[in-house]
Image (tube, rainbow over all chains, first blue to last red; front, side, top):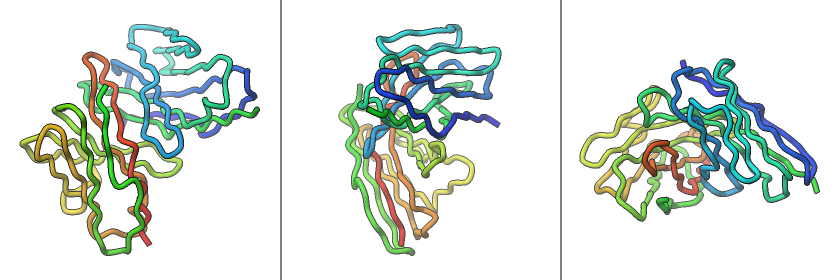
Length: 111
Length: 115
């Protein structure tokens, strides 16, 4: 069945780059997403990438998609303490309106 | 994007009781979704709620345990019935926003603890 996997924890120093990785299983996914969840809040859509793209950049965020390996990554440049949160990778499965989420990567940013 | 007001934000409940969670959206939406988020685990879709029809439940979730109402295009409730400690989790409602990429907007969640 569909599955999305990501590592649970990442710790970086303030100012460094963070790279959060994700693998997914549905090769026919149309869109892949990154969500951010801050403590006590719901998930916030950060960015997305269409499956026919291999890279998307949005200010400090860079999304890389390797469709052959079904690997998605989120790079945060110049990571700040405010970036500390849980980051969820998600894929939209074929047919839309059903999204499979990973377990989330908790990013710790050390000052 | 839509703004969702979800309440209560948290509750501690006795086993065997029921809790109803409410979600109010500031715009009309066709589909609303209810998710469960357990610590260290991915979000799990409980059901999809369309206005004017029965909710569609995912495998492992049943209407008797998680009855859902969707009386209009801006409001939905999820009830967690006959609760047990295993139901302790965060429950989130969400809606699809935008055209094209079906990114979701989420409510802030309800943290439920069953004792």
